[in-house]
Image (cartoon, rainbow, N blue to C red; front, side, top):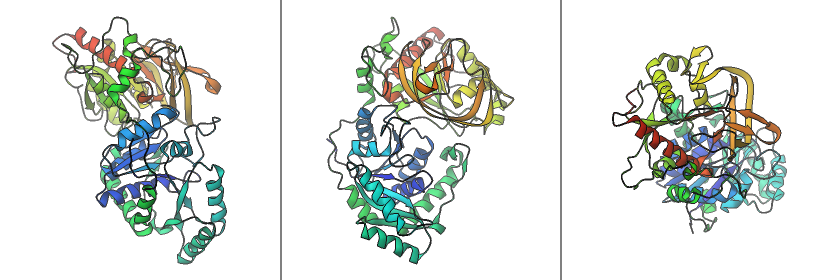
Length: 496
């Protein structure tokens, strides 16, 4: 049982200023001295970076598609442990979720799972009394979703605000804030959304401070906190990475759903490989390098937690700055990001590219998603990359976006053939060819195709996955890394 005040900040549609308002609320409450737990509905990596900057705590995702609805509450409780307020930013419009799957992965579903009141951020430009009809429709669409108030954004003038407030008062909906059009905080965007915090930390901090100031001026923080306190107790046991690993071991699992008889991704599925979790007698902790820095800033907070709980020593690597792998590196995880923005610097760091290629050639496990796939390719936009994957990548004008229901089609350091996982694609690059002779995944449903590469210990794919939904992935990867460390011998391999 956890009892933490909480709010879900939602909107009728994307582009209403939801991220600005949410981040401003987080920062404003944190400035009051509250310990604020930041959360984001859906697969987004960028917004949680701003949330972390606003609160000083890791931004965490709540994704009912990739992790399953049953993990939303436990993951929320894990992130909110020890906090005095939790603020959850929604995704897209309040009722938008996984395409063609009803409320699954929508903000509304998460609000119901958390039994949390919703604050609706409404773009009030170009309307006055009609705002009441809009809000009434959202409030009455699903009686189980409790909209506790509205924050008006992009209000034009005092007169405009008065008209909006009168209309909403008539509809019985409290107005908890009003932000003026002129108070918009500049946050630069590009082809995949906001520019990540890791690329503009100083400017991002200034932007977050501006968001907080705008929210303090325009919102009733006392009323918002009082609304958050109406959420009441939540009957959830906080997610724990060690317990998740124990549950995954030897039990069938499919990320996001339970499918009887489906193959497990637990580490025990590696024939003859015992667990290497912390505390194992006589077993050293294998060093796993995790790419970070401005070019590779997309990684869910639970991934390094699971790797650590499975017995690894996790060390951050910045491919823009570091010319060597960390000493003793036995495994490498390269998540998402924007290598296309830094292609010149990545290409110029030939020593690290050679070290990564050498690690992969040794058979050590390397897990690469999206940006990581591009970094392992032969080239990106004509510039040399690591040459581990036999493909060439380039920017394109086409956005590939959406949830994917995937099945492993090759045994790898992450999963055995037949393992089902759910993931998400989000990129404007193309890789030719898009799959190797041993692909990583086969996509089910409308996106029927194979994708990615499995070569030796390398698993490289465009698909973003959330390992909390299939904790055995982390265990299997650490087991493989421990084997690579033993094979490397006492001298180690991480010096590059």
